[in-house]
Length: 168
Length: 100
Length: 118
Image 1 (cartoon, helix red, strand yellow):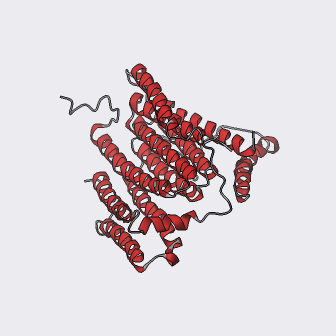
Image 2 (spheres, rainbow over the protein chains, first blue to last red):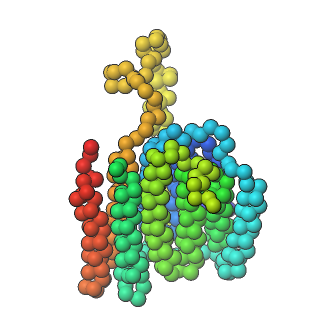
């Protein structure tokens, strides 16, 4: 077991345990903190996969903005932050069965992609992925249309969300 | 080196936990968090396959998934806050006004 | 795997130690003579009132929302700026169009007065 393997194992266990706690914790605020932990774990795994820029934006966007937005939303609905009574609904048995089937199905499908046979190729030296990403985003035969549509989507989300949450 | 499968299985587990969260929790904000978990699982699979095949497109997709997640969270949480303001409750089992 | 990440790992190991030290050190060093007034909750010299978990104003949420949208904008613009030197002129205009579309959002928020703290 090399250093990389044990690092992967540690981060995977951290991610899964905190994801489980997000779903099962009663207190909403604690769930948000566990969500931040999960997102950190995923960012660490991005680093292991050589996606350095994505690891950085995972921290900046998910933890710095999305998780904070969720915490603000929890603070705005404070009466339900620490709910009394049941936190799960009635159909958890069916849900657990469905989840097990979903997991088995996902694993079977991903086995058919050939991922099981290959190990990750060694990457020689430093790759300039950020510059490559920038070129892919604005090149006309790659992703320029989604790039512009993303800005329209963000504009619509900004205006819509502010309109809904403003006091009238 | 670690086989790509490990990353894919981790992603599948994370997705399953998120899906279970959506199915069994009653609080709308927790359901949003579970959706974030599912989107993260999809991103993880994208990044793992990018690393495996050595092409950049998977990482570009992660950008767009993040954008959509941000837009969804912004509008969704605003709606939840608005619902809380009028009904003082965000338990989805009790938000059944539109039930036929 | 770059060795630079070792430093970040080290940082994450050291970072919790410092506040832990700051919290644990008084346990051993400070004398403990509590009385009723001393152990009251201290809030800027005035007596506390109400609960700790208070309802936030919705303005915090609106500002976080605006921050989120422009945060995503920087995520897109950074790779574009890194690749700037190797891009054709057309691609530069695409980036400018991206900024202009989101600028419309900023103008909307500004004109509607959501940037004012009330």
